[in-house]
Image (cartoon, rainbow, N blue to C red; front, side, top):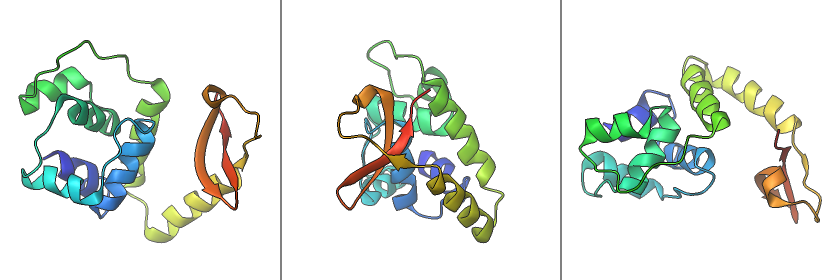
Length: 142
């Protein structure tokens, strides 16, 4: 169910795309291989509280609600979802209606907004998106 919600219902089309969204929206707390996302979807990889919380963040569903649906017990109080992560989960959901060409234009526009992160930048002040040619690219956090 979770893999279908993450990949299929958002037109991500592959477990690899789902894994990337999980890593991005959880700020790297849930970093999985595509095969692990697929294994969760097939029931071969057990759903741990950490994985379930990551899926909740990426899906924009409160962790407690998703825990009740999946039967996974949360062992510790969950920190509040970052409002930007919740907003991004909503954006990913809305992007499911875009054609491939439209999604490509959105990607190109988003990439045009990235700047080189200064070498002396404080990690908490920047959203680092990609590393190319020896530089981190990203955007300042607001």
